[in-house]
Image 1 (cartoon, rainbow, N blue to C red):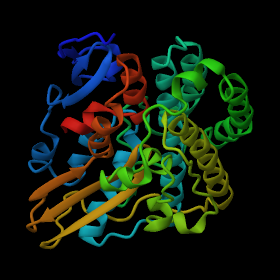
Image 2: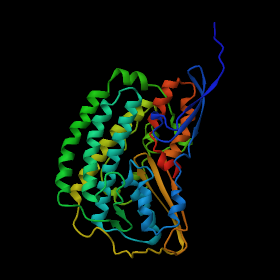
Image 3: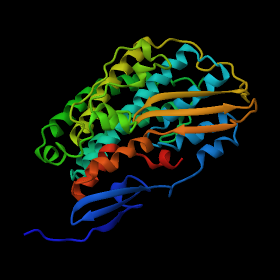
Image 4: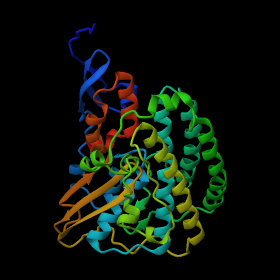
Length: 367
């Protein structure tokens, strides 16, 4: 006999530990089954886009650190590319290679956090997360050597980077690169065939290829659904066209595929870093740029393949020292558009896992 129940609304967040920040999910449930969900955000809104319009072009860079604060180096790069495109500034060769090394190290660090936090959501309490946080800390040590900071680096500049790599950086990077493949194999041994992980993630929260494209998702979420699209190859920026790397994809688009996609992308980032280390030239690390950049009247859009997907900056210049308009295209916000479709019909315990597999940072959603 079927039991008749009345739907009810459950608020998760905005401070629930599994909402990955100041984010709220307003879930309508029928018993334990998710009938509908309404994402609610805005609790962290800091008005970064409007603040950027009151600062000099160089003064905007620290604001970008506070977007996806797990990927600050990538945020720096995307903004600097847009400002350089607008002002017609050419970046020195050595600075380009340093930017690539930093961006791919940032990708590895961000993907480690994404996978570790996701496994924590799955119930693997803290052990996998601490394993991955251990390697992430080694990357943060490298960033501290170069920039003096461990979270918001403010390292890149319009025209290059703030300073050259210190003498001890490259030996420490080589040591990390020699160790990291072994750690990746260790993660696979621990997790790849783990029966609890398989039971909780296989076939759960499937995002089809068509849905992924229609929702404009990008990054690992899109490629886990089988779409081979990566801006580093589809629309190469900086010097990515000089490197040999693959674009891995998955087939099903479930939570397990999104986990595996991030692991495989980490391996490809290590390939790029090794090539950049071998090709790193000598020379200046910053172009001769005036302290107050004053681009000609016009507009520019630059986008990159950030760890979570397509991160873009749209800048409009009125020939003043501050952007007339600054708009950010954040991957976390766009990828969230798929959440409602892939959670309906699943249980409340699955909702946590599906949401965790999207991997968001609220700082770039609220901006």
